Length: 501
Ligand code: MZP
Image (cartoon, rainbow, N blue to C red; front, side, top):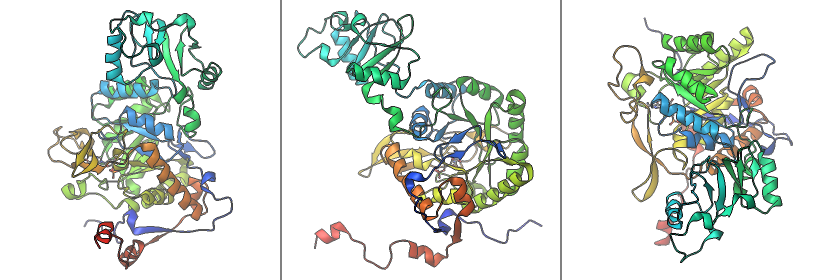
């Protein structure tokens, strides 16, 4: 006979936190959201930690190189989507690793024999008024000079050669390749510059540092960087082409890999973990999942996963539960897996971080996930709303929206995510294709969400994620008290209604 659970499974919205004593030192500024991402032994520190407990979903409509850079700047991590060719995905990873905060590779470069007309064409295309001039017009050619908007004016002969307008290299202040951002900033300040070209020992242009970007680190104190100060980036993989995809991603510089699968309790995932461990030992950090219970967690933990993702069917675009009838309420899944993780730690001395994946529809769901034992969350809908996500921003019914589609939707055709052997194709959809309300810039929205989480942690008297997990008190709420939690028994102000009176 089948096994029947005695309790139903619950979602985040069915729980609330109770305040603990708030000490005078419990202020949002004193709260640290730093959290481990990779497994570690008792007494050691994790090989990789996040500065904020946020990762972005392994999805076409969410995590490309742009979003990765924006999120790493704030201290989180993106997993670049796997439903693209190996080459395209590796190129995205490379672009993140090559991006140096404050150091820009020129994307609008002139040649000395270009004309003023060529410059105007480039200006229209790229929108930059400051352009380096190199011998061959490439971003890393021999630096011949710089052209800024102060070097030309309206009404000039459009055939004028750039070489006669630019400031030649012998009159430029330049920095040497390898210079720190702080040192570049100092030169910019001392010489009252707007831009500092950085050249190598042969005089080739390497980067540009702009005055406006020189404060990048100061403006992003939480940024997540590797030992060489490059942004940290993750990449999704699947259980089909892993033998080719993983080496390409590792060579491209991916700091962490994660299996992208709707159901990770499978021998396919163990095979991938075996492959990584035998080829790279502990050098490559790899996450597995998704699971929703103790059994799934233990299987992947024993197979060597560095972190384990939790959640089936709770994603905002997900119709797996409707299509296949599998899944579990996200809160119940986290509570059970976190208990299994803690018991595993007590028994083996190895702590395996867990990630709550999908189903966050309010900021406080993130706080609850952490309190329930998640070390970090993964979100798709949340990030898809921002300027930095890869999908189109369009106007629908008078308001702006961004496109957002599931990896199990026909549009993504990510059949590898749903691989259970047999014929390799997507025969029925497990995801939908839709819109989310456009919300503006990632950093503006993230700042508010982070402040809410830190405020709640202060209410609960916790200064770190680990302390929060240990001391949080959480209660289930009844259907009637859910109603009590929203505005109720008042007439809400309706501005149109009021003004027509
Ligand atoms: P959400 O943050 O939009 O609620 O959920 C994002 C998560 O949903 C992803 O990280 C992934 O685990 C899951 N997902 C992605 N595509 C589908 C689908 O098409 C899906 N069904 O469920």
